[in-house]
Image 1 (cartoon, rainbow, N blue to C red):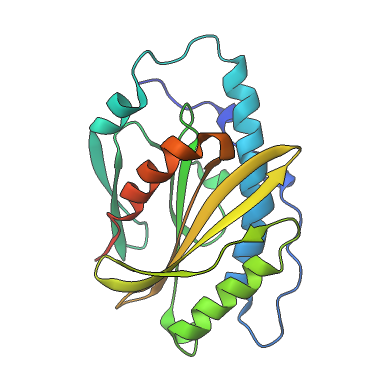
Image 2: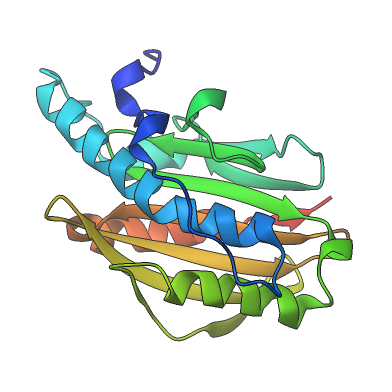
Length: 213
């Protein structure tokens, strides 16, 4: 398997400084989610340019690429997921601060990031969810769908779908907040809007493998 090249990932300087968070809410979660929109949309744009320049594409279908899987454990040891074998880890310099897992597949333009937060930093899960929702709805240019209650790894969770654009390129991504036993978690996935039909089910299958350790 070929090694990932630097052009796969967006430079950190593409992400502007996040705006100040609401005074009553913890800074960490709000800032991370605020930076995410521009940083991740910029990453997708960079990826499209670089993959267009690549002369050869894998002959295998998306289904073939996803058939083999591997289990990955978050850096803080508090969670794990099962992802396609060909997914690669994003280098540290291209990851958001606080992320404990960051993976993706450049040819399919499917990406995932996990951020875990200590429960002590929030009053309760409702407070954590509200903080996430406030940060998403206040982002410029982002259209946030209604929250959908779900269960992930046996834990209560809420899923948001967000639509945005960057340099005339439509992007869709999903933010799922999870009430774990040991921590609160954000699972973030994204892809190009024109690849949603194939990518959303595949990304959701990966997200559904999330489990707390």
